[in-house]
Length: 357
Image 1 (cartoon, rainbow, N blue to C red):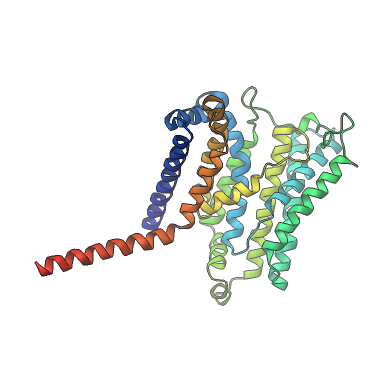
Image 2 (cartoon, rainbow, N blue to C red):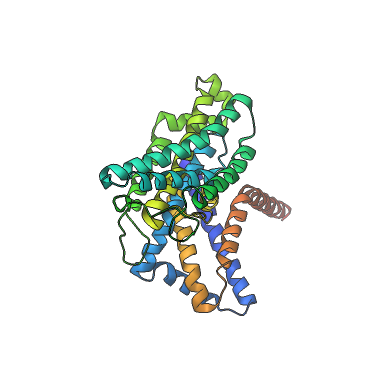
């Protein structure tokens, strides 16, 4: 039964993506553009060369982490909408280690920086989790507000006490060389953080799908009262999921510092946590689905730039396509009900016709 439901969902997801691409093609035609040329340029822009492939996977790294972060919190029934703030604090924590302990070797410094980002993101998620489980304060509102607090706080820090001495650019000094992750492809930002992310993804899959903790998290999210009567510590599992979620977002920020910018920047994230949340919602918090959909989103983001340069089709069309996918996925159950009702009516009419004949 579970395999059938998974196959059914994969078909729905495929049809949603196909429908969004068809609608995108009609939008291109309405603007006098050739959709075939546009999509060929998009594919070439994402996978047409070694550099393009590297750029696609570089954009995938933060999406995988923020998508997995959203998945574990949503599975437990607690909504972490504060990923962006946790990412900013995690990034700043990694940068602070990198500009403070400059003489540490990379084998010590990089784990230390990652630990700082993990702790910063996890602790920032712990606060709304405690408010939720102990005082039943809406975590959605709290985490959304905490996003603004984190962004403004780090903005102040990098423009005043930790500002770079060379040109006030809204960023810290460059981190020590020992903290800088190696680039894998020349001129691209793809770096060794992708190997860390691969390991983290495997661990998260095992945790969520193959352990009793993952099962308990899932049960708490589906029915907290039943879980409580079954002996599961609901509050503990919700707090655990929220802290892990915040820690993953913090690590995503650390990799932006250690592997991409080599410093903390005032606007270090273009909205990675929000994109990760959309990815998790689309694939219904499935860890494998998060990885695959992150690659798809990364390809869309990379290819859209080439598509705009080659055809003049605005890259904002990709945002439209993403929105349409989400719309179809959100209305999946409603569409299924309508289709089943339509087919049932057709069968009833057919049987009535055969009976009268």
